[in-house]
Length: 134
View (cartoon, rainbow, N blue to C red):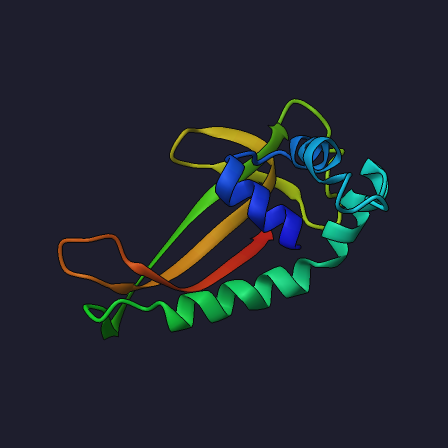
């Protein structure tokens, strides 16, 4: 988790393969037992609850003072893993076929739902974030 957070923040690398490559190239001398890419990816996937809890703590503790705690705003957006013409093959336990009425097309993927505290003249501060099948 530390390597992932460090590399995404300081090196601005966001793909898991690039993060692992950075760890191999620059951290191997300090940490000679860096796992293979497959093991690294598997460990990241098993840390999903830890990332969720960390996000929850950060959102709660870093809540801006200008939040209207009695007013919340809700929005959702699709996360598309492939177009509706194709068959979904990624994260089958999380994804489903859905329809985006705004753009007028079918897709495989999931939806991100965000509930946020209203902030006048600014973007809402996330209160809850939820992923559901499309």
